[in-house]
Length: 399
Image (cartoon, rainbow, N blue to C red):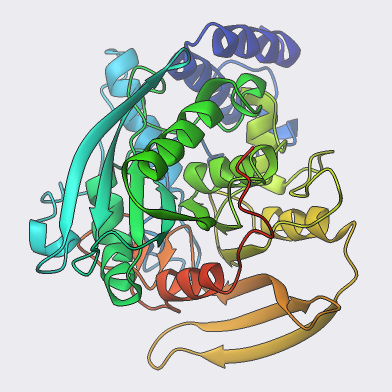
């Protein structure tokens, strides 16, 4: 089968919702198993397995003694797992990956606070979620942060890894963690690469916005201070929410993610993840008001190319005149970083980009109690919430 035929078949499988089969087909092509000359394919650099959409790297798994500092492909681990379930003849097994114990309550929730379960349904489907309620909530209007987990993760895992609930307890904020369902994506990825899930009022954006508004109805939420952030596929979904519901979210946080419209199907998602790709979408309102955005990305991310973080900011800056300030620092005993702040005419830092040197595809400054975290910092959770609370919507209208 020729490469173009494989791409067409992978696209057909994706549109039919058969994402695992499409992923396996593309991986075989890119590895050269079923293509006549896969080494010539632009997505198959020699000696490296290309990424799949439903995996992220834990920094403890990204280096080995032979190649210190080089990010190994965590995608290959997930790919082997997928093959185990879709092709019994392969008999490939994970190596060096131990099962992680589920996080405990003390890993997820500070004492005195609540972490409750609920669901939301609309014509697009149904999603469960976990809501963090800070201990000092007594009916006063509070900010709300929507946190979108990465592939293979759960709300509990993401809460434990980011420790967002603990920072939100300090700042007295609600935090909600929508849960992607395996029926929607076998690896529990948000489907950021499908056009049906990139539009207002449809698909997953309508579900995430619906969860947000359900909490706003059921609790006292300040409608001017509602935010959305995420990791990897969840970060790409957060970028989509900032674009499609910019009247609902006052700011967005994108950690190791991609811009809205970076891909329209599975093949283009491979391209975007490998090398970044421009798109026509941008996180601005129709009247040109930019959506404040904070971006974190490791410069050794082998899963989502760091070019994607530059693309997010470039799109946002198209309609905005800013001045740039650059700060360089290092976490004691951890990563060095470059923090670039884009300041608008009013003197407000409207965009921030944290380039984390030596970091891979993992939540910066996160806790080992959760998956795909890098405790070597900087603290993305604290910085993201700090950035969020610096911004609010200009009106209370929620569209």
